[in-house]
Each structure stands twice: as structure tokens, then as C-alpha cells.
Image 1 (cartoon, rainbow, N blue to C red):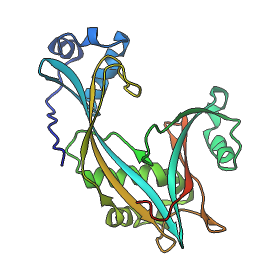
Image 2 (image 1 turned 180 degrees about the vertical axis):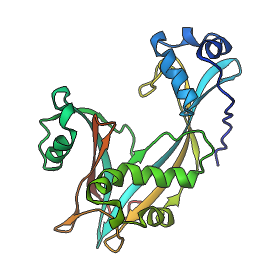
Image 3 (image 1 turned 120 degrees about the vertical axis):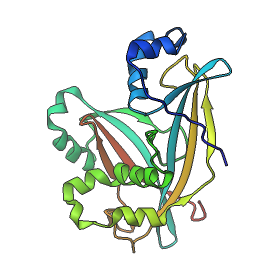
Length: 241
């Protein structure tokens, strides 16, 4: 199993932090990202460590493959992100309703996942356990928005249901080079401690997933009052794990 070796120390003031990370400003392709990089460290989204003379960004990333099994048919979540058009930012609830109805005229495509996993989310380096971070990720991404709409009290045990049904895979390390696609801070290498998991929902589970004519319906996440993530269920081979 890949071992995590991330150390988190008290964060000094911005100018002292930059001075302590000698050369970090020259590494970044866009020096204007320095305040954002510092904010990420300060918020414990990631940390910066010098290894063998090279500065690297380190992140912890739970990821999950999300399935739904109904009879002999198996479905897997695929996430696509959209950004709400500027002129509609004052009516995010209306936009969400339109997207849920299939009208995408109020949003623009922003991203799709560049790997095969259903969802992933960088977790904070606060000592949060892998289990807690993974349960939170699945709950927040798939169900937070719909539960805010229909009422959390209708599914009071959903986090526990997620927890007992998660299966965890072997942790591993993934790296991106300074200029590699997907590296948010070009010029600075990044190391991800990946923590994979799998969960399969079924009709017997009390979760807010609608089934229409035997097919699970899309889920939606409203993020930062600006983005909408759509979780589509693609049919896959019944043996897919």
C-alpha cells in the first residue's frame, strides 16, 4: 500500500512563507498564482514540500466508482461539469430546474473527468480519516443538492448507509509533471495520494435516486452558486467492478 508522508506544519505569513519556499515564484508559470497557492496551503487543501532539492505539491485525493445494480443491469456514474452563464447567476435555482429538465441553454460546458473514476475530491490535510473523507465526498457530490431540495430528514441515515457499503481499494501514488495537463499550478510538480473506493447502490437501499422504467436518473450538484455538476448513469457490463 502506498504510504502517505505528508507533513503539515504551522503556516507563516505570506511573505515569510514565500521566502521560506525559496524559488517557488520562479517555478510557477504564472507567478500571479502565488496567493492562490498560499491560500491552498493555509486552508490545508495541500502542502508544499522540498524533496531532494525540488519543491512539490502534495494532495490527498479520495476517489470512488459509483454503481447502481438493478436486476441484471449495472450502471456507473459519469460526471460532467457546467458553468452557469453570467446573465443567469442571479437565478441559480431556476437554472438548476432547467438543467434537471434537460434544458442546457443556461449553462456552458466546463469540464469532464479525464480518468475512469466516477468522482474524486481533494480532501483537507486535517487528520480526517480516509473513511470519513470518502463518505463525505460521496454524500456531498451525489446527494447534498437533492437533499437540500427535498429535505434531509427524509433520508436521516444516508451517511451511515454509504459508510457500510463502501469497499476500499489499495492506495497508490499518482504524479503530474510541471507542465502536465491537469496540473493546476503549472511549473510545480504535484504528487497525489490516491485513495480509491467503490460503492454499489440497489433499489433496496433508501437513497434519493429516482428510477424511471428501470433506469436510475441523473443526479445534480450545485457548487459555489456558479457550477452545476451532472452525474449521468451509463450502462456498463454487469461484471464491471
